[in-house]
Image (tube, rainbow, N blue to C red; front, side, top):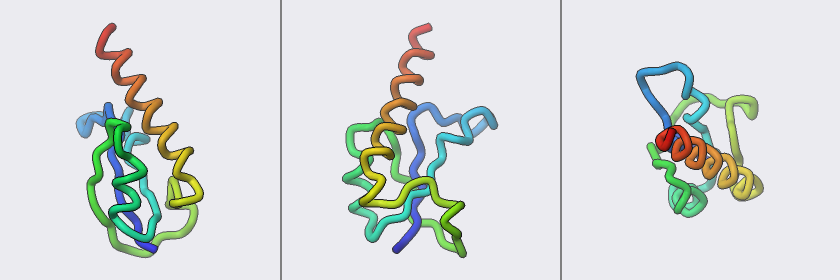
Length: 85
């Protein structure tokens, strides 16, 4: 299994307030992650390397695919609502 970084819609690298928009996703392949985040507004950042524990991971695919999608869609919705305000 590999670890990939996914950036949710609304992430602002200039602010610590959106650090939770950077997610670490464990999956077998890059394509599995890209399929899971399709149409969520999230950006696939790439594979990250290092020693990771389960506590470091936000989601593990495929078992957490729906939870990942829900989280990303919620971030996208929050971003749209803030943009309209």
